[in-house]
Image (cartoon, rainbow, N blue to C red; front, side, top):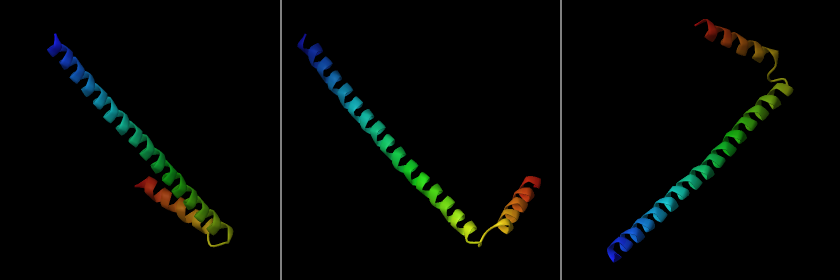
Length: 78
């Protein structure tokens, strides 16, 4: 019976190790997703801020809007 008991103990140890590794991977993926999402939000915020600042000081305006609309129309036709 000791051999079976030993095998069960080794099997339990392996299951514990597998679960620990699995949990470490899941936690790392979660942390990575949080970092990536934070960076994406920062990027989009800065893009919006850049566009907003340029359009307020007169560098951009209806002329830029017309260019964008024309470009979108050309893309839609092709």
